[in-house]
Length: 276
Image 1 (cartoon, rainbow, N blue to C red):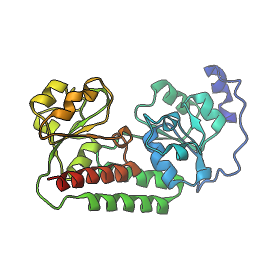
Image 2: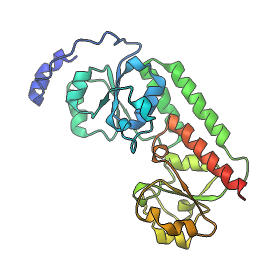
Image 3: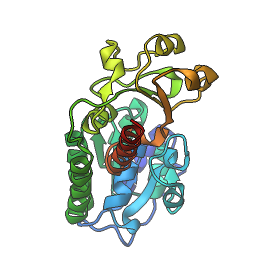
Image 4: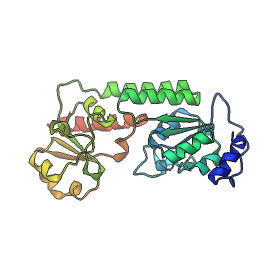
């Protein structure tokens, strides 16, 4: 594929990148895969064989952006997603998000790279579909099925068996809240909480200020940011409200992150009930 693309490389100013020899483990049934997105990274390392992972996105080495334990992320090469890097990696297929830079996407198309593009998972069902598709791409359908079963089991275990639970507000980095259509909002509902931001009529990425919380506090404030207001000492003195830290790694991704997020939310729910 790369040899055939050399004229295009020259046109792109990338002709100095010599074509790599075919990787000995590149098989049609179990292709080598490079991922450009941290949420796809998290699914890929669960589903694919280690030798199939040509590279993960560089975000997975950044604790503030990764949904993979740092010890796991360090086992793999990473890529910033440049065309030069991808040529050197010689993957059989690239996993990318719909937000991939258009110029990079165009260059990959011109080089005839196989690219599978995924959107943001807005629900558990969306995420399960992504797990299934990545398992199909990797030729690891059985591993994908096992991960899907773990996710479904976590959802079933987390479902509250009582009526509407405590009100909760998730205060994300930047002082914003998730929209009702976000995956993490569905997880909050599954765990038996009532969304305070929805009750307030807030939408995706709306800013939640300190004054609004003081005036109308939720039962539980999940703090997943480090803005000045999010660390204000007054938050610890609001009657009837508990302030609980929530790891940013649990907010944005699906796949195995669903399991960890539901476990954390269930623990928060049960601890709140125990104190009542």
